[in-house]
Image (cartoon, rainbow, N blue to C red):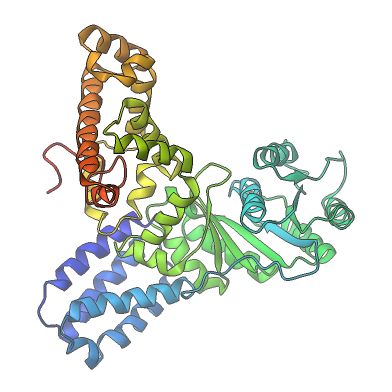
Length: 464
């Protein structure tokens, strides 16, 4: 998300930082470019106007223009204004302060990812908040909608309300709340029906469910990729139903991010959660300050560390550390590193969290280095025998041809992987020689010393 905006703002601020002094005219020129960048990112015009005026008011102050590094000060002003636009520095958690079972209403248009998001929210409440959660599908119109939620519930390990054919949405909601009270549930998530567009029938149905259940939270699920349409949907739902929070889906697929930047300012309601992938656990809290850092190319190291702590398997990491201390690193270990990378959101997900990575991402794209490449490399390793994975030196011409055929790749790709493994193994030996603190000085396993990308994954000739 925000790739286009990050690139544009990065170019603007790179030029700004090189200036020794700034005048009001310089700041005005920069803000004109920022305005265009925001509009191109699909941010709503009223939001852009308010943002630019706020930044201009602060940026032309004497403490900025006369500071030692005026360019850096303007970037800070823009950063602070972005945080305010996105909702302030604090995360807005889901409100569970009510007598159990707490009813949470999930609303939105058809196709926005509402049912999947319901399961993701349920899993998050179960795993992070230690809550007993019941999900209920009130969608009696879309074929197999109830069965879909049931399947997602089984995947997430969350209970779903038994399906009673022919029952109407309001009656299902009442039955869900009754089951929640009788069976000791902490939270009841009500997945309402959607439509392809907002109409009176949809709003009347959702309003009736709201009145029957008195939800503590009414979470609007919107697809970030719909841009300004998402903002319009949010405005209409909030005016007619009363939204308390927003869940944004497919933010990993939206390079512009204008909907996220506009949503809080237009509706006055916070973005509480964002969907960052297809897996049922791919949902994160919305941190305005961290998102502002990503937009300005400052990275999001805190989220990266949190994601690593959640996804890296401790036993596997300890085994690898023990092998590295003995100077060993085979192709099974390399495959393990690829799996960990995919669990953390893949190469594209990790890149967005690393500081100053904007221009490098474009070069990676030009070099065709993506998550698909990692999957091909995993396929190559999977096509090897256990003996070959333990001892890559025995892989000669005939074996390479067999491995390439089995993995659907080429001999050149097999050679490239073997070279990459050798580079990583050499690095691990250097780490081993460094002693107890070698792992910290040498970087993350599978990453070169000092961070960056794994050896062999750099574009030809490196980054310029």
